Length: 519
Image (cartoon, rainbow, N blue to C red; front, side):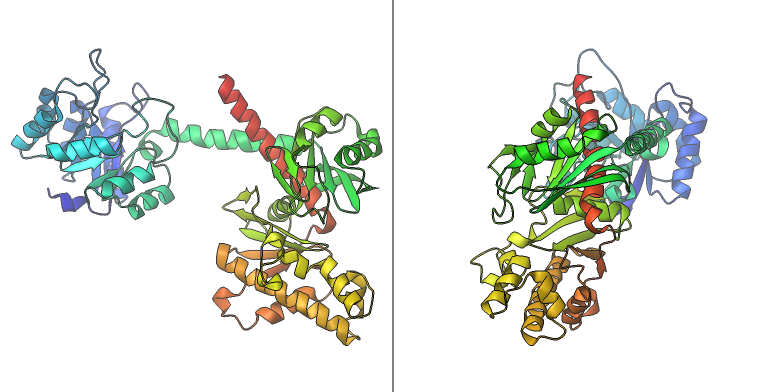
């Protein structure tokens, strides 16, 4: 065979679980023929017995290996010259061996010389870039990433794409192997420079693949069980705080208490606890959606003009102490984005949520995951609306609208300006300027994230006709660049519903992580 026979191809490793129900020659031959029928270019077969069974059944290229657990070395993939020669004689076109630099019974150079003397190609299974460099210097024809993550320390769960790319700088003949479990991962390996991609457990170890699906089903079942148990969700706003018992997308009960801005977060939490006293024992956890920045349960202000918060306030800790249950906190717009993704206008598609109210906020959900931290704080970007001198929201949102009205000699709230716009030119100019700037923001968001939809929320964002104004300002864009705008469906409850569901996900994942640490 020629090395080029493997280019851009798929190789299937037909290695059943040792001692499992498929660990027999007949099944391995069936695996091999089924893989070739599906389009595999080559096979990787372990043991002389299985190689001798498969070789007469196909002329496809075969990589042969022997796994040998020895007391004198950690090297177990074709560790001796005698085994390498036996694989050649049994019909392997390529012989693979442990290409790491660990102590070994036979040198890599000796293995390569023995295999080459039989007219076969050599493949070094490596764990890192230095292994690959040494194997190539010794004359290896092909280098695999097979042993990345398997020579010490915790075993990874995803392919080593970075190693694929790094070895590709040394040789075009890099074989991507190890933890490639999905078609997307196989394609990514090729994009990273792999010459050929090997898939094993996902196709020929039914026990392993079944365990992955079982873990996913168990995780989903656990989340469903948690979703059926109400969460006390709290949305702390600049003028009022909304609290509710939330199960999934249902708000079972709801209360509103004023946010005494000068009283501080301890008093805001106490006010909710007092108002929700009748719900004691009905919720399993508490979750808070808040303006500003939340990291590891610590709350800080991003724009103190929106709501003054002491720097580094330990919100999750305070909630857990006050309510006696596990607590979670997130930015309110990020929580609303998750709520719209799960239960509202997102319908499970990637989305960006933009809320326009007293200020401007947002949240991003990509590949089914929310971007937390500072992601989505669009109102704090130093945009063209303020020439970079102040946050974007200072030149577009509710406070700015009221200030513009006052400067024009018409003291009015943002809501009053919107109501007057149809019949007052000064109000129309302010509203249209707001829409134009938010439309520009949406256009930039589309270029940044390319979401399937941008969901608009907030008192201004959902004001009658406002989304139509945005679309008018975006109409001149080419269709591929034009955002798809949709109104938020969950309304003022988006933050409550979103943070309740998000808390269930985050606290469940944290519990799994802690259990793994204890184990």
